Length: 303
Length: 329
Image (cartoon, rainbow over all chains, first blue to last red; front, side, top):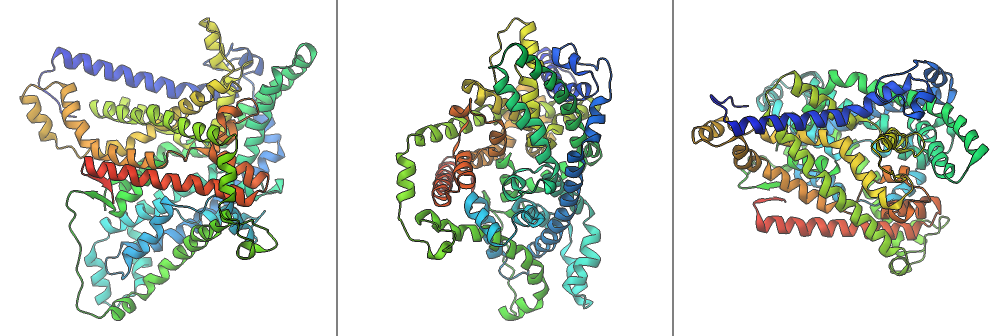
C-alpha cells in the first residue's frame, strides 16, 4: 500500500476497523479448524459435552487408532491415491498439448476449436444423458468412469493456454522452426521445460479435484471395494451421523443412552478421519499456495 | 465459485469485451492448405482434447432428445418413440414444480446476496493493510477451507450443529439462546447452506479481486493523498472502480448460474425432515433420473434447468452491455 506521510484521525480509525475486521475473519475461519484438530485427540466425553471447546482435553490417540485399524478407510485411501495419480496424469496429457496448440496464433481454425470447447461451459447435456454415455461406453463400476468424464476442464485449458501465450516467446518458436525443429520436439524439448509453474498449477488443480470428488463414485460405482476415500467418509461422516441426528430426537430413556454410547465411538473416529483425509492437502498447501494463487491469477489476466 | 472459474476461463479466452480490443490479423500470403500442413502436429496435440469434449460433452447433448421421447433402454436413444412435450407438461403440472423452482431460486439468490459481496469487502480490506506476516497469515488461513472436500464440509456442518453434541449449539446454550435444530428444521436449511459456503469460499474468492487491485496505479493514490482524500474515500473512488469490471463479469456469470447451485453439498445435507426447503431442481433430477430411473422425465427437467440458465445469462449479459462497457461477448 501507499505509505502516507501523515495519517489523519479518520484514517487511523478506518485502519483500526480494517484490522479488527480481518482479526474477526481470521478467528471465524480458524476456529472450526482448531476445534477439529483438538477434538481428534480429546476424549469423546469431553468433546460431546462441550467441555473441550478449544484446546484438547484428556488427550487420547484412540480415535486415530480406530481410523488406522479400519480396513475400509485404508482401502478408500489407496483407491483415492490411485485414482488421483492416474487421473491427474491423464488430465495433464490431454490439457497441456491442447492448450499449447490453442496458444499458437498460427494454428488455422483456432477460434473455432476454442468455441467448440467454450460452448460446453454454457450448455451441457445434463446428468442423465451424461450417465447414459458413460454407461454405453461400458465404464460403469470401473476406474474409467471416475477419470475419463473429467479428463479435461475448460477452465484449466484456458489457464494453461494463457500461460503459454504470455510466457513462450514467439521468436523461440520461429527460431526452432528455422532450425528444422518439429512442433513435437519444440513442445517436449523447449516449451515443457519452460513451463514448470503451469505444470505444477495444473497438477494441483486437477489433483485436488480428484482427491475431493465423491459424486462420480456415488453414481458410477456399485462395488464398495472400489470406493474412493470420499465415499467412505460419506458413510462415516454423513450417512451415519444424519441417521443418528434425525432418529435420535424421537428416542428417549434407554434407547437414547444406547444411542449416546454409540455416538461416542462414532465421534472418536469422526474427527480423526477428517484430519487424516484432509491432511495430505492441508500439509502441502502452505508450500503450494503460491502456485494455486498463481493459477487463479493467470486465469484472471485477460489473454 | 463456479462463477469465478468461469470468469477466469472466459477472460483468459479473450471473449470478454472491454473497450477496444486489438485484432490480431496477421494472415500471410501462403495458402490455407500449406498453413494447416505446416502445423499438422498441433492438430494431433488437440485431438485427444477435442475427442474428449465430443464424447463426454457433445455426446450427452445428443442424448438430450430423450427428453422428448419415451426412452426405452433396450431400444436405445434413436429408436425410442417420440412423445413431444409430455414430460415437460408432467413436470410443469406436478404439485412440486413451484416448490422446486422456489427452493432453487431462493437458495441461489440468498447465496448471491450474502456470498457475493463478502469476498469483495475482504479483498478491499486485504488491500488496505501492509504486506507482512499478519496479512500473510490471514490470507493463508482464509484460503485454506477452499480445499476441504464437500463431504468433509457436510460432516463438519453436522458435527458442529448436532443438537446433542454440536459445539455451536453448546455456545448458544451458554449464551442462553434456545437453539433450533439446524439440521432438520426446514426453516434453517438455507441459512446453514449459505453460511457454510461463506466460511468455505470467501477467502479464496478474494484472489480474483486482489489480482485486479494489484493493477491499480500507485500514482493515483499519491495524487489523491495530496488532494487530502481519506483512506476510505480512496477506497471508494480508486480501488472500487478498479475492480468494477471484475465485479460486473462475475455478477453476470452468477446470474446466469442462478439455477445451478452447489448440488453436491445439498445432496449430502438433505434429509427427510428438511426436504421441503432443501429439494432443488438438481437434486430432483438426480433422484428422478438415477435413483428412480425415470431417464426421459429427468432429462426433461434437467433441460428445463439448462435452458433457463442460458436465457438468464443472455439476458443479464444484454443488460450489462447496455448499461456498462463490461460484458461477456
